[in-house]
Amino acid sequence: RALMKNSLQPFITAIWSHMSHMYIGALGARVICDNIPGLVNKQRQLCQKHPDLMQSISDGAKEWIKECQHQFRQQRWNSIPHFPSSLCSQEAAFVYAISSAGVVYAITRACSQGELKICSCDSHKRGLGSDNNGEFEWGGCSDNINFGIKFAKAFVDAREKMVKDARALMNLHNNRCGRMVLMDEPNLKCKCHGVSGSCSLRTCWLAMSDFRLTGDYLHKKYNNAIEVTMNQDGTGFMVADKDFKGSTKNELVYVESSPDYCIKDPKTGTLGTDGRECNKFSRGLDGCEVMCCGRGYDTMPVKRVTSCDCKFKWCCSVECKVCEDVVDVHICKPSMRPEQKLSRRPGQISARLTQ
Image (cartoon, helix red, strand yellow):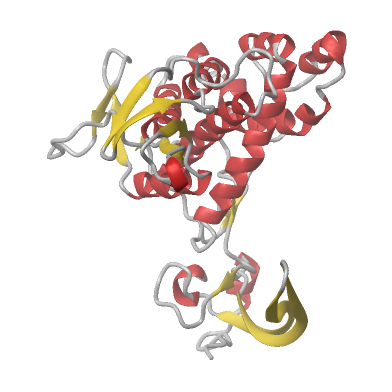
């Protein structure tokens, strides 16, 4: 059970740090896979059998961690990579969904680019098709999203299937939601072959959208995540809000409230907002009042180097100058330690910078 509670941390740290060394033959792959901490037997077997796919999973990890941090860059919780899997909050729901989507995305992309022996383009897209602009012929290299989903499900879900509790059910549900986003959003791309570039004849294929759109979509799902409780027979969920009339099938779900992200807490893995940069002029989540949790902020001048006076030079480049500017940066004040609170005299007011 202790291993289950710590399931996400090795999935994010140990696995990703080891995958870059997988291209060293079957025997080497076996040795490395046997020594990656946190893998369950099913994952270890897949790692040994498909070391090239494990490299794609590593690429997917870099992709989703970067996207997660982008999506929450202006919020108190800013997507820390070592997010503790013992939490069952909305943030955990997002982490599982986007990590699952990231694996699908990376594997599917590798299939289309010919980097994997086990898969290639989607061979089912043949013959004639049609859209709002008329008929076209399937061609090119359609992304093989079905293969990406199949392998990601086998690898990512393996750990959660070993235990029957609310956390495992929640993680499996959110994993599936993340994978399905990729299935729902492929773009039809076409190339025209008609006379003088007309589109009387078209060859089309399906391609995944940019992963940023996946992150945007899942962030919206995060904002509308549904609180649930496990039903009595342990096979599914019940919505906590008795007035809820919709379906949870394609929605992110969570089973416990989020911790206080204002303060550092080793038990929950939260880092607090001490030292976070905030926007002095914003009234939103990135504003200093909200981001700093009412503690106030310090202002300091910072030198920043940017490209400026850019000009297009024929043909074909852009030349820019390097400019240095000094700008004011606003940083959240640290939380007051318990001993500091006790040492304050009655009536003493702490200094607070509120420029």
